Image 1: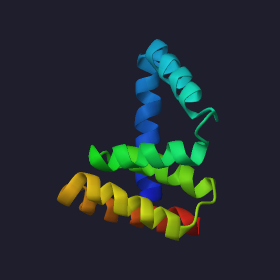
Image 2: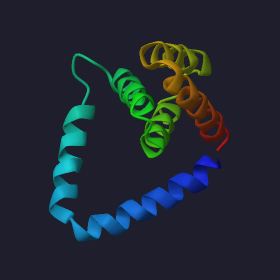
Image 3: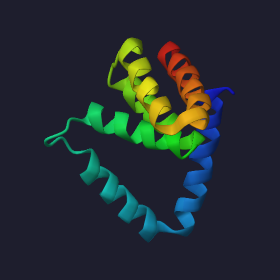
Length: 112
């Protein structure tokens, strides 16, 4: 999978849907902004949590969004792989396969 092309395509699909359901999108955006605001947990921790959930629920687009966010937050590949280890442990075989996808996305987004 070419993660950058995939994300460009899904962002286009999301933009088209957003025009049809603007109130829902606005609400979702506000919820996301509130959830990502630094508090007792920083944004990196929150993005790792979101990535774990994305892997467990097998959501390719969610993996792309949260891996890209983590790369932009300058996390290390070593820390990223530790997070993938935990996601795999919690989710078993399917999460192992999706953790591999997430690592491929990390490597792709890190190359810019």
